[in-house]
Image 1 (cartoon, rainbow, N blue to C red):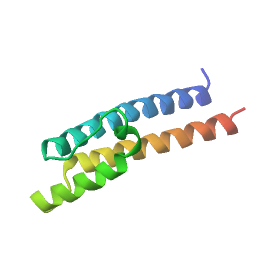
Image 2 (image 1 turned 180 degrees about the horizontal axis):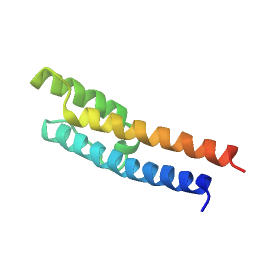
Image 3 (image 1 turned 45 degrees about the vertical axis):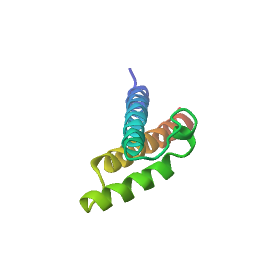
Image 4 (image 1 turned 90 degrees about the vertical axis):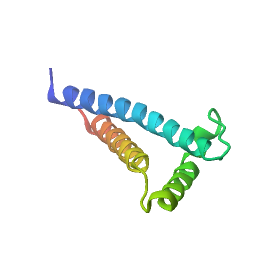
Length: 97
């Protein structure tokens, strides 16, 4: 098994896992906002307005606790890991032999 294939497999696995966690954390943020009186359309807006919901969640938790909630940081880490993994996959696929 070549090192390039193993690297590709690891980055694909990281991208898939981080995408799943990103969706879970996004759903948890939307659920939190829904419990606090914001109307959320889970199917349509979760895909296209997540940054708006993230901003609302951050603002609401800062008002309540004085700092952003843990889900804010978890979502940012998950999306960052996803983006780094996807870029790494693209580099491996384009630059690979």
